[in-house]
Image (cartoon, rainbow, N blue to C red; front, top):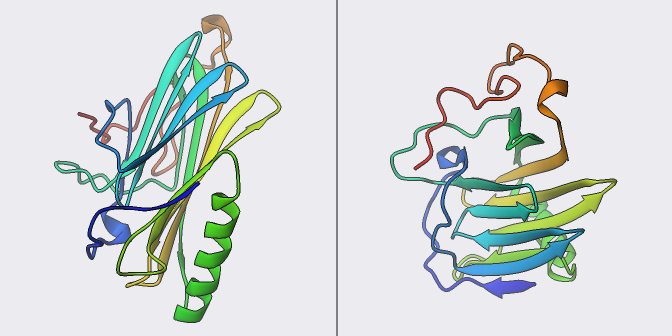
Length: 196
């Protein structure tokens, strides 16, 4: 689904994005409700950012990537943790593209997401290549989603990928391990992440 977001496009920056788990639903400009193999999923566009709400019979997951007031936590490159006993993996990257390459990539991604039954994309009035897009997927018992946040004024495209896997019984969960920079130890969130 492709929509034009009814909000002014402002000069936000890719560096202003922050990541958070467990945040309550925020006001959304566009929403897509999905059912994927027993999971209820809601893809939410929050202006130049996104929120995904995932509910199953045995738990809930809320992921927010946004320019959040009161949060100075940069977007991590990777996080691996447990959310209500389920494996959660998040990865992000920033691509820097020339003006021509950016336009081509924007058109390609918007076409992909707009025609997909599990896709939601929103473009901003005033800039043809400013958009936020989400695409949900199911693969071998794992629910996941990919997102794209476009910042044409600085030639940057932020891409994220998330997977939520099988529930692990408490006795089979590994002990906490040391995290790589920007990652969470097994079973916990990075200490610097604050959700409201």
